[in-house]
Image (cartoon, rainbow, N blue to C red; front, top):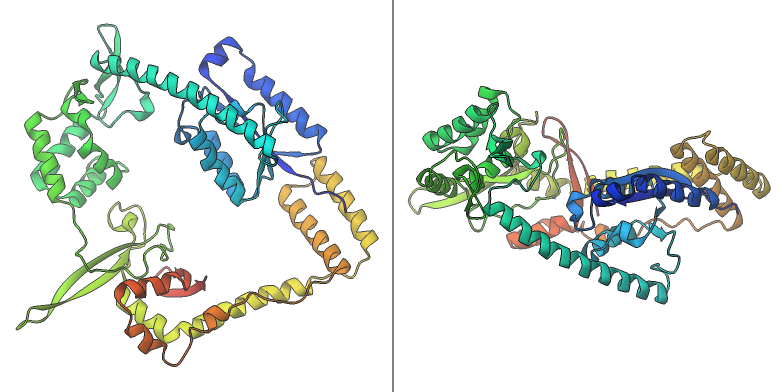
Length: 463
């Protein structure tokens, strides 16, 4: 059978120091990787370059890596090419975090200048771990030296981070010829107003709404949380005087006390049965659990707890249009009564998909199919067809050849573990479960609960 063209990602990394010494380092890596891909019949799916990033940068700061992993998860990549292992990672912890993702999606990598280093052979893995260990030691040594230099810079009030990481109300400036943090005239008034309003009203949600309405800012709960906890606003960093203060030490202490008292803790015993499997139909955010209690017996003081689910982006940040609250009691009651019918609908959908695939079988001969596959590969390698079309057509031809050579038995997914749930005594058995076990029941049965825009149940998918 004609081999399927592999889609390769070219990963390039060069530090700022390397750029200064070798101005065309990125271009040289790219040319070598493109040549390798061309010689091995691979199609370049994307080029991912972390320019000016050193091996000391944490995984979260290497944006190209995250873009690459997003495409891996979207199944757009089959193999990753890089020049040397130290271009990929010099940190063992980060390497294996990424490797776990690659293993999950069946993506391999090739270090084109180090063919002996790989994950497929015993000797290759040995060389890999030796190189990573040496690189980790170099990173740790450099990190300690940089930490010492940064601590000295902080004591002197020197700026040690970029404009992108500057908190609201500050910007980079010069003081006595030294680059440091200064107040930003454009956001100074809004920052002062934020703290003044919060201390006066002591309400986080009201403060968010005030900042959005008064200043037209896309002000979120996470921004507020960062401002209330950042010591920059009292003029210090790591305990040292560092920048102009917005708050006195007394005001800072007062705000910390107000903020701590303003945190709402869910009462013990309140169990959210569907947490993690309900998403907002508008923005896709996982719905958050919220609740309240009411007295059901005034003589005994007995209370009943009510649980709801809401989109915090809509209710708190006001950036989503879905304002409905989903009642846990109503949802639980509906699912218990209609679980079997919902399962039947879901099963019919699966059967329709399987029947459509069965009808797509082609009667053409193996010779004709192989010739079509060769033409398809040639068209893709010359760039005359897009990947989505190529992948779909290749899979169709490949499946047709497989069915002609060895027709697979028509065996569907085993759903007996789900069908066994639908017994006459399901309701009584469920009633006997503790709240924690009821939560476990739904999480091992349902994959996701899909909602309509008005908050009503659309359909459910099963695990």
